[in-house]
Image (cartoon, rainbow, N blue to C red; front, side):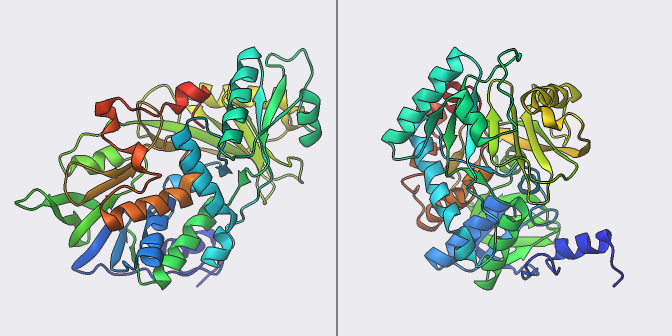
Length: 416
């Protein structure tokens, strides 16, 4: 086959490429014990842990396009666990501990790099909020520490701490164990490991309907490749969960928003860590290829478009150029938009639904990638046993009826 990027991409979508792992791109069987809708990081992680830890291998992971082609391939790869609410601390710290050994677990290099996550304070409110986070994290056994502006610059030398900035840097919180990983490598690693355990990964297989029996329980999915019977169905379709769940007659407390990010042209290493600014919704790290990876906030309107308002990216770049003057002459290589499902309290939904046999993992907003291994691990246990994993238990769908919300957006002023 003639070498070209198009050929490589087609091979990658089929799971046969020299630069990614090879997984078994299966043909659908008539019936499975578990069908997982969505072959992103969370769906593949769920399938892997179901097979590896619960002995359930008769699983199909259905993907309407290609493996990892949704939000998994459209994120800024940040990993951290320095959340404020106790429920979130437990979930993201669980994920962090899995990240630390994930390459060994999967026998595949996911390029996890604990280079540190630096969160900037620009005003007195930021200082108090971040110090509150630090104290709460330490009480939970999670590493986090306060740095002065000078110490923050020493940790990230290209950071501008001049006093006359529009958003002057007054200090920062640092989680040393935070960092980044390669998003598509995570999907490939879980896909290969799950496939080796007998899981069927079925690409180009769009779910068009969820069928329920006379008792109301799920019994099958209709797909573009035929009907597939299933005893249990797990929906992990980031950005389009509401659409899929509507097929089973459920209305979800979700809104979908575009979330933008971009990368610069490749440069030599200049960025030793991840720097985040909640106040101005701008954050930056550097990939192993040399690109500066820059993330922005969500748009203010609901949409399924994988692009966002120009003013959002413009505002972010203005802030980045002020915080990091060395970036001002760089050219943008590409930008994109992912679609994030957002709940009223900006925390995920993990667990059972009113439909017997139907489970859901959604609503991660901007926190999905960093939670990938932890999310898959607790969701797999929930699917296997039919009751929520203890870490997942607070994130029930029923909390919106009882009012036991986990409001990370109000706690942190931003949900990244």
